[in-house]
Figure 1 (tube, helix red, strand yellow):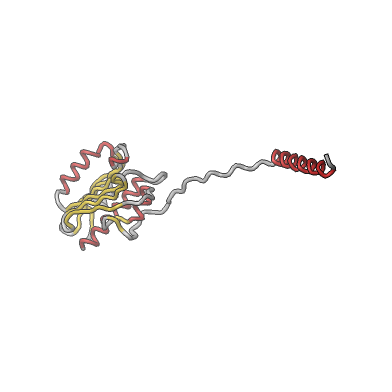
Figure 2 (tube, rainbow, N blue to C red):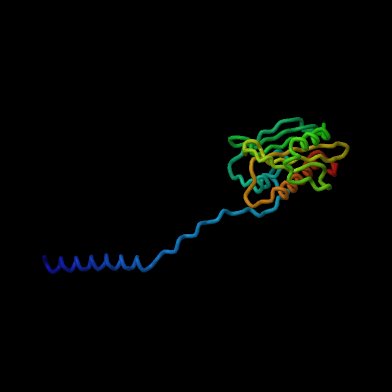
Length: 195
């Protein structure tokens, strides 16, 4: 073997040995795993709106959903309505009417009273917030509210599929119901009050 060949082998072996030793001496610290971010914003009355009365931002904050949602709504704007936000299945729905408020409240308490998380603050109206512990497809988070607006006694029922981690569902739903009630008053030109 030529002198030049021996030098090349020594340089190559020396480089490999240096790389092996240096990789054994220095340890890379493990890369930190990013923690999921928690949206700590409060539910507020900021448009644009879904279903005419629910802020899109509020739905995203409460549920943690970032997927596209389609809106389907129907009813007669002066007396009743229903609206669904869906992706594969309904993720959020709201029903409202100016008729049958007492009966609707009784039915809500009968159906969800055993699963009640909280009653509504008295200034908001009569109603409840519940969790049925069902599958997301069943809309296990439920809120119901009966209130006054002018000479009418409208009611609203809300259900949704999930809640964002580390959010207080009772606080969020009370804020969401308050926004929905105030928006209802704006649209129907009446002043919402407790029932």
